[in-house]
Amino acid sequence: MTIKQRLQNLSENDLRKKIIIPLMCGLNCHRVTNLHGTRERGKDVLFFKKGTFRETVPGVILIKNDGDIIKSGPPNRSIQVILTQAQEAINTEIINPDDPNNKIKIKELIIMTSFEINGPAMEYINDNCLKSLPHITYIDGDKLCNLIIELIGIHKYKFKINTFKGFCESISNRKYDTTGKTSITKYSEGKIT
Image (cartoon, rainbow, N blue to C red; front, side, top):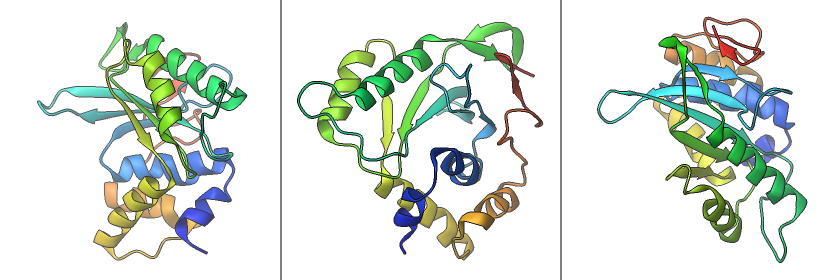
């Protein structure tokens, strides 16, 4: 079974906790936090990274793992759900971890799946969101697999879903939160502490 097929067999919850959160940490993002739940406001995973000029860039990942993200004919329920979540993620501020008395807006939105994302779906989301956030990144199953393969290829690790988290922790020398309850950085009732 290919890596992509194994990822597609995961629940969205397992994909987020076992693959995406560890991957973001392995890709040198920091303060990677699981936000999924009733108060997520479109943000499944929060992360911070260094921008071109060494500034801190806050980003979020919106994850869907229940099939291809498509738009054919009138908007279907899943594309409408994704659009609503994307708009919420863009328009809802988060507590600034460097200055907890202030809130900040996200600067990067990633829509991620282990399945496919077709052009009309991306265009539909862009048409409805780009005025609020000029750049949205789409990571489909092929791009996700390529990120994983590049990361594991450098370290000569054989990919296994149940050991990927430990592998990413070992190469990044960081622990990160997959529960949203306990972590060096944690998210609790709309606050990063």
